[in-house]
Image 1 (spheres, each protein chain N blue to C red):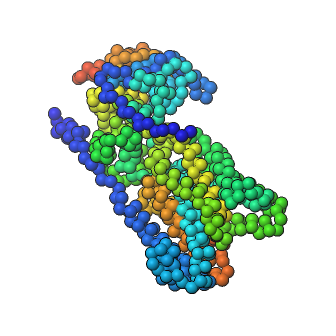
Image 2 (cartoon, each protein chain N blue to C red):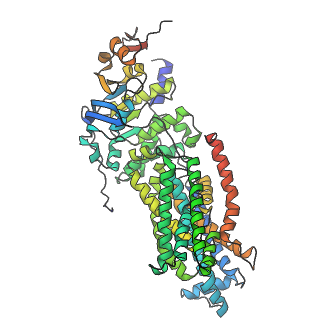
Length: 276
Length: 364
């Protein structure tokens, strides 16, 4: 029962292209139902990977498996080259940060205290000291634009503000692998763009970002790579310009979809076909 | 670049500044205030009673005993102080600290501000163990038999309540309170059964559990609970940071490196230890673990690094004060301490229920 605490070692700074996470032949069962059938994905440093697909396709399940929340029934899930089960909780916390779909809090901590919780994994490493904690917290709050209400209790915030605070907590963790489950769901137009710009920024800095999105336009604009899930399988995986096609999206979503170039920039636009 | 875009670019790249932190001052101030209250309350409580002793004599006697000068008061006063008042005061401090700390831990573990050893039935569960050992005349561990049986029964009760009131990684307020009602009813029945089975001498002893009192304090009793209380009180603050993270929920806490399952098991053991320590000497004294952490959380915020040790300190102050009131308000008779804390604590609990309900917009 008693085991000596060894200090968790932080991961090396990733080089763009490094494989930070991946699954091979992943099968996941939830409540007796097979939710993912043989999924292979690779998550590389320096890349934003968007997981898209209709409701119930298995996006959040795939993200949850990468986060080590859900066990694989078959296949392997690797984080930084090792199967997830080989890592301890403190080691994983230095390697991946997870933004859950909804943010809850049992006690009225302030926004700043919540963001500071993101630094908890580093307390075990030691050495760095409180200065770098303060810097990381301050920077994360500034990036997510929550500095203005740092002293307010989390419970007094609106849904969109809570979502940004949760994001700031995830950024403060400074893990090289970010797993974000629908970070834009509660946000207005401006902050949706802000969050995905942040994803790009983290990727440029060398992190790997996996983000579950419903808005195909956002995925097309900001993701380096898109994995389209359909009924627990990967229907397509590649740069948005290559994988987003009328036929495939219409098929996957069971709804006529048009993919067109932006009249000014030529970027990929995705819109449902509405015959009204 | 348009003006708007320029502004957006400026906003997007702010300098990494240090944010303002919650002033730690409140916590320090409260700690200092509570320590001060203890320093005043202990000699005062030692002096007041059927045989009044001036505070100066109390201090003199203590100084004399530790060999720092002072003077021994008359023999009666010395005997009253060291055989009656001091064991009772030390016991009040231990029981109060244990209950306050157990309450803070329990609220953290359940992520629910209404959890408390008394309300969810753990105190009465531990009492069943204690009563059983009296009624059946158990002595297999000597002086420690009573705390041990209280611990085992208390632990069983916490685990039961925990298993029954959790679903999907959350503890609903309603489920927790209803589970508490059921557990309290069952434990009450068991206590009744043991009273039915016990002989007259044991019945008198058992009645004392149901009311909750420190009137029978002796040094051996202090020694009997000291190990349980000390281990619990020393271990509890080690888990403060992890309790903070647990407020985010099980999964986010795990994402931040907390081994959630292990944390819960360890903390449930600690809660059972503390509750058993308190119950085995004083019977069921409710609401200390509910009221004290709540007031401190309102004053200094929910951070457990202050809340856990602070609740122990606050519990000690409140229980010492309550015990002083219990034995002086109706002198020469003595109010049962558990009755007094319930009288004052129940309205607070009711107010808390109303507030939680309003915040959640109903129970359904």
